[in-house]
Image 1 (cartoon, rainbow, N blue to C red):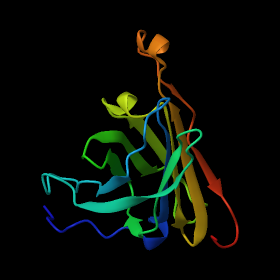
Image 2 (tube, rainbow, N blue to C red):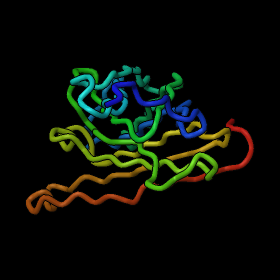
Image 3 (cartoon, one colour):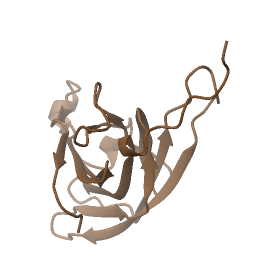
Length: 182
């Protein structure tokens, strides 16, 4: 039996994140947090390796705040390289309370020579509804030398809908653009 570690992933299949952007819409009259924190966790090694996957903490700075609507945008331009098959992320407020949890993962069956084929999924954390009514997440970077943008939008339930536990999600999209990221 061979106990050699698996070969490193093909660099062309990695997602190089260059921008992580979160926009949140607080409830009417609510103030947005002064900052958010992002934590990226790579997939745990297969075959019973480490108990927990390595993580990369990244600050999300408040970039814009619209006083009229209360919407706030947070940005991190720190670079991170995510190897397939997946990485998990969590966005927390300045007190450490989780707002969003999600994954960035290579689409099943994608090959290195294919156009970038990563997807994003995220869900609100248990206490997120107390802080915001909607979230948008944008991840920009490149894969196999081609720019890639992944997006996800979530609208949390209104108080009327919350009685039924409804949360609406729009499908995440992967946009592949030829050329350079600006």
